[in-house]
Length: 98
Image (cartoon, rainbow, N blue to C red; front, side, top):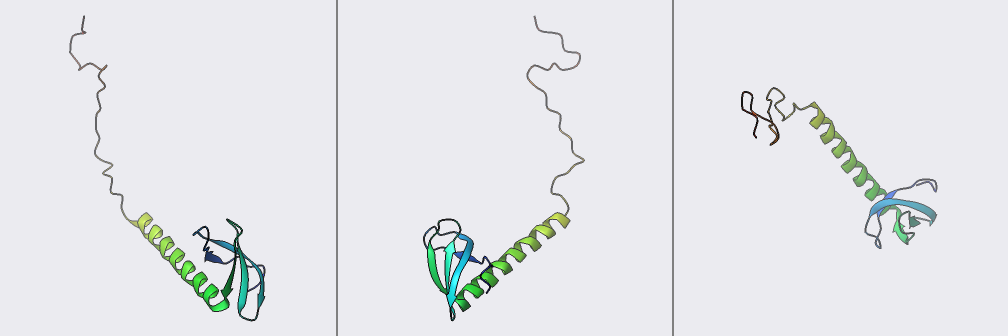
């Protein structure tokens, strides 16, 4: 991973899946900083990469579901109309109250 990347990772302090800034690395270990709370964590390269892939797959799944929901017909019957009569309205032909 590049130092300019901001991978998504679960912060152990604020418990949010949020972007993390890569602060540096040594061999296969990365020092990352949560962009939400500022907590630092040491993470293995494989774990960080796997977490990012899983997050991206979940995001793609959500996008596909939203796309298929747009393609489905509406559950609302637009041909049905309802007439609402307010308490101040009068029925046609009814005499005005005194």
